[in-house]
Length: 399
Image (cartoon, rainbow, N blue to C red; front, side, top):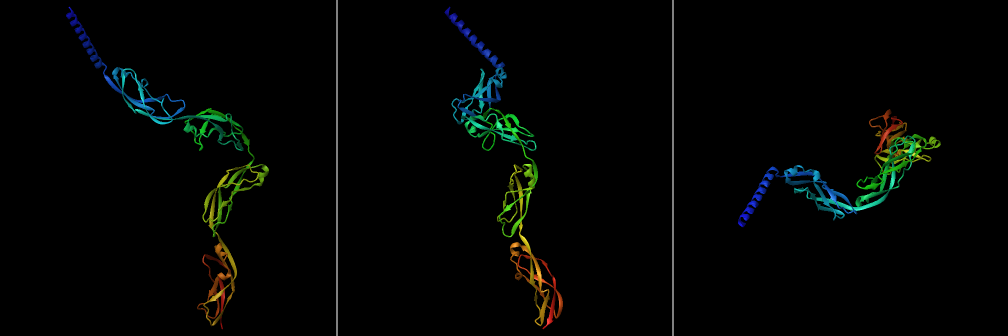
């Protein structure tokens, strides 16, 4: 009897094993294992200490390859996959940390690309900065803005220490285009560095600020000419040729009584000491007494430098006779002439009657009266521009 029972149990166990084997085989054939790749799975960070600020982390998304039975894999979506980096041990600076992937039951992780994330964190910093108001645009004619007044004089800036440390002020821009009276606007607050560049990766409170820009009525205006001024001696032999301002006139504002007396404004003196060539320069306008505003405040001046040339007339220069025969006496009528010369001023001013050779040539002439051309020998660099007599009477008499 016992042997029969033992034989019966063995048969039953074998039957169960055989049934399970057949079931797994059928199941595997109908619902086989398959792989699937999911791209652009968002990467999250967690457990960052409150004393730190996350500056950056790369990548923002990852690619995962999973394996599981076809039926389960077909129902799987991106939202079922959780990828993250644990920042519990993170300190200020940069670190490379492993990426953890959490999956539904029955799904296996095959591959994660990339397997690590590059994390940058910084110490948290909060500070206060002054709020300034900057008018933008142009008000109506004859109006000008006064200093803007923000309703909130300080803003709180917080974020990564390296970024917050760059902030020097908070700014609100108020558009005053066409304004004739005080302008009140509620506008976004921006935080700037020392160069006026906006720093966007920090938080500022408040985010918007109400600001008022008062307007004032300007005095009467009129256009007047600009007269450029120079100072200093140019290089010897040169002088200032012309001075051209661009624009050639500017708008000034002053009480009516003062305005009527002003016909032109001068520039600050332009130094031309030792120069021998023209140049351009931006020069400020000198604001006359009583004038409250000049527009524009400076002009571009073109300075022309030219050679300093002069003309000079030398009177009573004797006319001599060359190449006359010794058997004749010679006389010239008129015996003196006026000579007009031109050249560099520094050379012309040194020329005297003794510096000139004025003569007539008697070569080949005999006794009698002759009309002959007057010839002039000049110093180097000097040009002849006129003679009081081009032709004189030469008289030759036998001795």
